[in-house]
Image: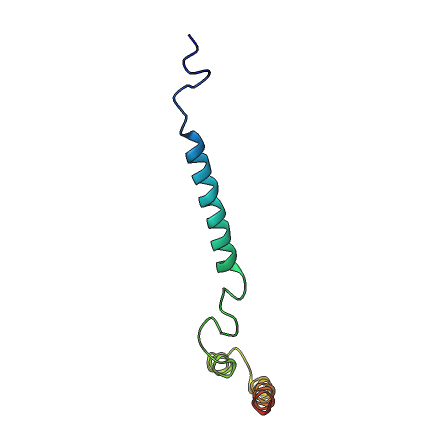
Length: 86
């Protein structure tokens, strides 16, 4: 006998396959947003610190010498002053 014309008891498999693909697509979209440089937060630093704070911490850790620190700080302050005038 044909038992339902090929029906072998896995009639709900399409449901599981559909669910699998929906979950896989959701995972890919989630990871794409999490791993992109902006991380979904435009205009914010990941640590919540300003560029001057980051520069100060790098200088305090000894990553920068005094001349490099002063030059980079001057550039950042000039950039911030220029942005405030706009």
